[in-house]
Length: 538
Image 1 (cartoon, rainbow, N blue to C red):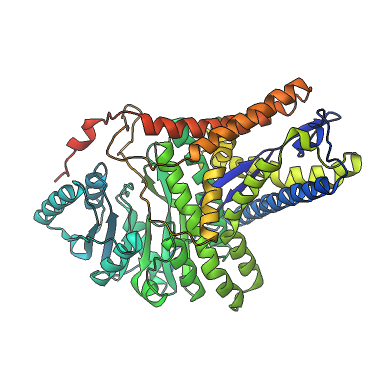
Image 2 (tube, helix red, strand yellow; image 1 turned 180 degrees about the horizontal axis):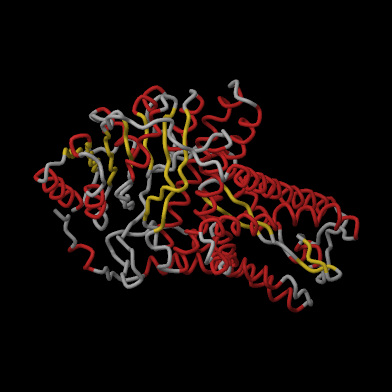
């Protein structure tokens, strides 16, 4: 069983069989009962080299994950503290980029109006590029806030140049604050957000402060629970480890504050990638700015509740990170940064290439292809190291994250690990496509992730308001589900019973993602109307 964690996201590959009663990471090796006509041929040698190369490549990510865990454990008891406190609080601009957020725009503005900060020092910018009735909702809310004494600015663009990055750039030109707090439409900031973060800017070298995302609807469904566990690993372990050890880490696009001069001196918001947040983060740190991650300051957000929305989000994050890698990696290696920082930055920016390796692995696996010759020597020198590097690391990684965050209930969360692995496998085709699109410079728009204002299990999200993207990808996922169903039958028929649980995860992962995608597309509209009746409190 092996797994790979990749930056904002996590993906998994699992591959194991029993050989002489020992679990090994080479599935194809023992699935040879049908005969292997290419055994010993040039084709078999090529297949063996490709197969082992994929395994070794994926194992490298497991080793990196162990290193992240080590850094986290080493620095976890060294939380950052502000150098001083402002005697006079500075002016802050809260930027709220919005596009067709009919179900959550009002909730966002309501929560921002409740943030504990002097009104005379707070500017609210509603950067609304909407083309639907969201425009009327934001206009009404803005007018109400103005009547209550808030300094609110409504900026509406009609061309959406640069998408979110373009909206933030336009807003920055009209911002009155020395510091900028960015909140996406699906976030609900805590009242003390600004007062717990602003004082870190007393250090003139600090350019950005990132808070940890929380999850408003973590327990809404199996899908949201899996997303929460995925994100917890990245947001707690990776971000904390990189931040406190002095390595580069990234602004997560929202729930963070920027020093305005840091943005401007680092080249501003650019939109030649789909991850404008990652791009600006690395440019700013290359320019010498210091970033701070506050794992104990939580800003809750809504997780996507439909599979197509989740896949769209993952595709954008994956593609954008590879675009940023192509753009900035040469600059990083030409810089005078210490070698350990360059190496970690490389691992971070290249992490999503693991999706291609996972896709190659799925193609390379076939019962009739055979595998490398067995034996105790190969088991000791290849199988066991690969298993420890790639397989055990995923369990250690997520157990560590859940135990740190939920010391009383972490064992309950870890019970979902098989589902987590299956979901990661099912997403592999979606994200591998994103990697390839970035490599060949295929252009695509910034596709928003649908949000429905879901916070309780009793709420329904099915709506015709947001049409899923038309794609043939679910058909490919269905084909892989059928493909691995054949694996399961073959393994059972030939007595490879130790392989069956792992093969079932491949089968279930592709099948779950496929059927959930079709289910989102075919579902009828039935949105809980109680969400739309909320009003901004006085």
